[in-house]
Each structure stands twice: as C-alpha cells, then as structure tokens.
Length: 615
Image 1 (cartoon, rainbow, N blue to C red):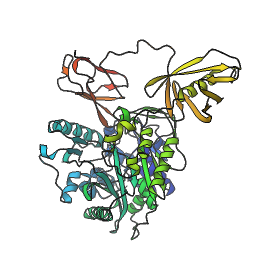
Image 2 (cartoon, rainbow, N blue to C red):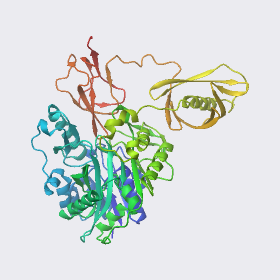
Image 3 (tube, rainbow, N blue to C red):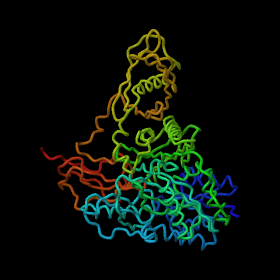
C-alpha cells in the first residue's frame, strides 16, 4: 500500500497528481528548480525538495537528484507525470533499484516503446533510411519524448540537413536525447489515439479514442473524446492494435497509442508510455481517474474484466501563454488572474499572482467540458473560454474560442492542417471598440478626488490606448446631465464597472488595471503616455527579440556586412523548450549584429539590423 509519493515533475501535471493523491489519503512530495521555488505545485504538495538550478537539464532531467530527493523525503513511490523523465527507462530502473515503487510501466516496456524507431520495428514498420525527392514531404521526429519538440516538416530536400540539426538540438534540450528519425508526412490526416490502462494480471483496457488533430507546431491544442466520425471498423481496428501493442511489451499502467488516420486507413505513429496531457477527456467520458488507476496498478490491484461504459462527449482546450499571430511566440510575465466558469474543469499549474517564466512550456491550463453530445460539449467549452477572466501575458484564448466555433471543427471535418489553412482568419484582431472608452471612464473615476462625477460641464477629456496593435483615443466630457460620450450614454461608471447604453442596449464592462495594462472584459489594452518617448525608436530593419530567451545559434558566417535575403534565418532563440527562428525582414545587408550564442535576451532587445537594398 502506497502512503507517500514524490511527483517527479512540475506545473499542471504535478498539481493534477497531487490532487488525486490527496483524495486517496497519500502524502505528496514535490521537487522544484530554483525558478519554481514558489510555484503552485510546490505549494499544494505536503512538502518539497529543491533541485539546484533552473534549466531542465540541471533539474527535472536529473534522475539522480530526484531519486536522492525521494530517499531523503522517505516516500514509498515516484510518479513521473508526463514529459521530462516520464519515458526514461534508466530513471525508472534507478527508482526501482533504490527500493522505491515506480508508478508507471515496466522499464523494459518504456525502453521498447519510448523510442519511436524501436516501437515501429516491433510492429513491422520501418522508418525512412534514405530520403529522396519522391519521399517528400517528410517528418523529422525525435525518437524520445513528445509534445511536438524535435519535430519538423520538410518539403524541400535542400532543407533536410538543417532541419535534422535543429530537431536534434531541440530534442536534446527537451529530453536529454538527440536521436531523431524520418518518416513520411501524410497531408490531410487526422491525429487519433487510444487510451490504454493495463494491470499486471493480463487485463488491458482500451478506453476509447481521442481526436487531437488541431495542433500547432505538432503540439496539440484542442482534443476530444471520442474521436468523431470514425467508421466502426476503423474504430475497432485502432483499439485492437492499441491492445496488441500493450500486450506485446507486457505493459502495465496508463499509456497511449497514436495513429494518423487518412481516409479509412490508420497509420501507427507511436506509443507514449505515460499519461497524456489530454487524459481528462477520457476521464470525463468513462468516469474514471487515470492517476488513481496508475496508483492501484502499481500497488498490484487487478482491473475489472471490462472497462466502464462511455457516456457523452468531452472536449479539452490547452490555454497557452503565447501569441498565435506572432508565430506562436511564447509570452512571460505576471499572471494577475485566471478564472473560468464552474461548469468546466480547470487543470492548471498557476494561481493568481504567479509569474510565467522562460524555462518551461508556456501552457497555463487545460479547460475541459463534458456534455451528453459533442455539439453541447463544444458550446459549453467555447462559452466558458469566452467568459474566462485571464489577466496577464497574451494568450491563445481568442484562437481557442474561434477554433471551437469554426464550421470545419463543429462539423468534425478538421485535420492536422487546420491551422495551416485558417490561422490568419482565426487571429484577425476583433477588439471591442467601446473598450477604450470604458477604460478611460473607469480610470477617470478611479482618480476622482471626490469619488464620483462632477455635475459641471467641462471640456472634452481624452485618453490614448494601444489595443490589438493599434492606437485608439477615448473622448468623453462632464456635461450638465452627467457623463457624455459620442453616440453613447453612460448609464454607470466607477473604477471597476462601466455600463454604456449603446443603441438602447446596456452593455456591462468590467475593468481591471495593473500598472499601464488595462483589461476591459476580455479585451486587453495598454494605457499610453500623454507624450510619447521620442527615444523609443529603432532603425528600419531592426530585429528585436520577440520573447525572453537564449540565443542558441547564429547563422554560419554571419557578420556585419553579410548580404541577406528576406526570410533567411539569421539566428535562433530558445524559449520555453522550443527553438524560434529570427529571419531577415528584408533583402539587403546586415549592418549590425549584437546577438551571440549563449546570450540571454529580453523582449524588445535589439539583436541585429538589416539595411534594405535599394530597389
């Protein structure tokens, strides 16, 4: 019987495991890097152990330090969560060799399946050894790990070597293993997976299917269960193959078998020997707790002969601190507030006031809705996200809402190319044009010496805001009948709530302010100074850091005076475990280069300048 567990992970999944352990009466121990010293997962666990350093390679990827922490804390077992060392057979063995219980599959199963190349060989599928023009497009993929890291689509043979190098570097950084392989890339396919749960007595459950086709950079964004519209024969085929794969390696615990479905064919991708990020949709549909199932299997309990019946439909959206309109650039900063309606499930590793740093994945939370039908689940999730209060860095919230309401998704006609086709339209700014006025009115009331409006006519007042990248001016005045604004009647205004009568309809605007950042309902604005700073200018062709991170590479031979072409990669930044290319904005000459490998940069820092060639 397990009485105490060390969670060898961080963030949302660590909090998720702690929650189930608490419900089972199990004591929990967290581990944390220096960057995570006050993170939510360290606060919700019963106790915590420091892993010195901040980079994953120095902390959460150090199996020796984690085993040492587990022994020092006196726990019975270790749960790896997902990511980091969750699919590392050496770590699983080290846990067991230390006399601790491993809440996961046997190391031998991890060893076989955690390498995608070995998993394919087990099922008789060979990766591409030599790539020719006829094989294109192909997918470069990390042999270990997941989450879209170490993965690249290559459409031109000349790009293959560079993409292989980039994938190896990214995989080594994220998983401590730089092995990559190449396989055919199927256009227009759906990403479908099967959740399995197996015990040590020979029982394997196939807990239905999930569709995870909506992805950015090969990392899932929206997932649902069951996968909609699968022909019955194909549904039976993928579930049977998932059970076969689990039995082939003597699997025990929770795992996922992934496929790319094209037409009426299913192509095996990999088996993930761990819990998946999207496991809550399966939990909702089958009424199970997969973490509790993992723990019971580790304790030696047998599963029932058959899994519980499926009920209804569930959809999950991953809320990221990122800007989809700027090449999915990750965002950092203070998360002032995060709240969603109680009708949905929120799994998060952050609380109000926490800081989002540069070292780890930018996922803030998972929001999950369950309902009797797919249409109802989608409607519930979209409405919850639309009403969610998210004050802090830029997020993908608007993209999620629009994706869920897109006719291609609601009709279940999506595939993995969804964002390639629709991203521009899904990220088109659509701010509330009355938000600047509401912000200005709330600000004026908040600064009022008398706590209210003066019933005295006055000159028009103006205030400028940056909204969706554009400057907006709000104008209002104190009239004889109270507050007045062009075409709008002000029904109520105080520091936190403004009610405007717009064409006879009263609209409520809740206003929150954090320094010069203002939130009006779901619209974010930045209050601009009355007189702009003339020094805050950069020369044309300036390349500014779009995010905080580390310069990991500068293009070979790049120096001041080098001719460059528009779109040519000049340097690479690593932030939140992903690499981001910085390209030349125009064709011309590199006139300045300030970035060097290993340099830490902040948003807006000048990296280089390209002087455009004369037409």
